[in-house]
Image (tube, rainbow, N blue to C red; front, side):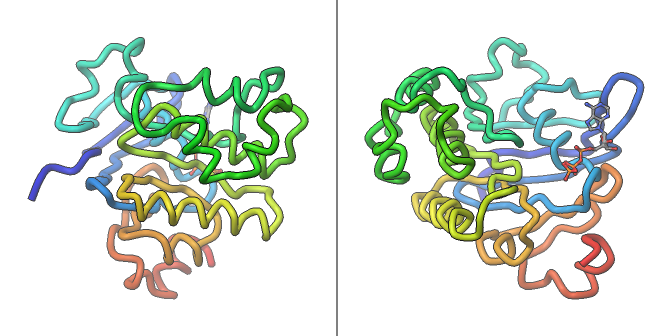
Length: 230
Ligand code: ATP
C-alpha cells in the first residue's frame, strides 16, 4: 500500500507556553475522507493549524506526500498541496466573488468555471463583493477559494457551522461531489450523523490526543457518549 498523503505521528504543539496537543496520530490516504472529531477544545483546530504550518510543531512529525514538513520553510507552506477552509470562512470582503477566487488560483483543473459548476450561486454572484453574500454563499466562496489552489488535500474546519439546514445540505452535497472526484479530505464538523455518512474513517481527539480511530460504522453509541458527549 502506498504511504498516506498526510501522516501525523505523535504530534505535540500549542500556543506559546500553553500546550494543546499531546500526541496526535492521524493519517489521510489518497482519496480518503477522514473525520476529525472530539468535543470543544480538544485540539481539532490546533491540529489543522499545525498541519498547515500556521503553528509550529514542538514534537512528533507531519509528513505530507512523503515529505517531512519540518523541512519546508513557512513561506513555502502554500506549496504543501493543502487547501484550507478555515473556521469562520475568511474571504476578502471588499473583493468580488470572482476576484476572491482568482486571487487564490494556482494552476490545475480547478478554475473559476469549475467552482461555478460546483456552486452555481457563486456564478450568479460573480461581480458582487464578498461582504454582500449570505453566510452560506460566503462558505461556498471559502471552499471555492481553497479549491482554486488545486489542493491534493482539502481541510474543512466547521464548514457548516451556523448555516440554515437547507444550506448545510448544499455544502454536504458539494463535499460528497468532491469525495466522488477522488479528492482527499479532512473534515471537522459538529454534525456527527453527516460525518459518519461521508467519512471513510474517523479519528477522535480527547485533550489533545488521538484516542479512537476506526471506520464510522464502528462508532458506537458508547464511543459517542464517552468521547463526543452525545
Ligand atoms: P472547537 O470545536 O471549540 O473549535 P477544537 O477541538 O478545535 O475545539 P482547539 O481550538 O484546537 O480545539 O483548542 C485546543 C486547546 O487549545 C483548547 O484548550 C483551547 O483553549 C486552546 N487554544 C485554542 N486557541 C488558542 C489560542 N489562540 N491561544 C491559546 N490557547 C488556545
